[in-house]
Image 1: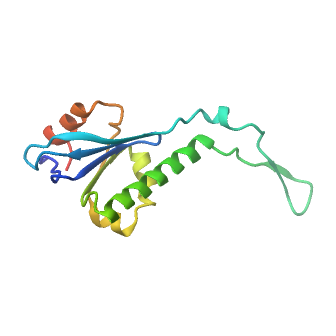
Image 2: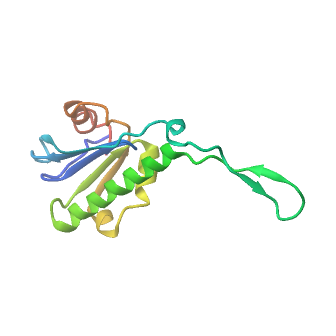
Length: 153
């Protein structure tokens, strides 16, 4: 595969459902130099620690049949809210001219969640998406994994 190309001044957004790193390329396309611009984190306790009530019960309209309702996954809801907020921040950055190019790197699950919140402006600025979970790595390792090794395009 060819090396991933990142425009000068372009943002590389590395995220999952709890943490996001917004990295800016201060180098050029040939020799990227990623620097951390923003870090967003959200504490997200386990679902069992967030929910307090037992799942509800549903009553059928006819007959005496009852069934249980699935418990809300608060952990999943918190991840969705975090990614929705991140998409809003990125949309604002593109709309205000802070950046003109975005590349998203996220776990496949988080990538699927955040795509629903891309605005038209953000879609136009999007240069690529990579389905990898690299948010826990240091910046130099992210750079090595994506830009230098040619692992993604």
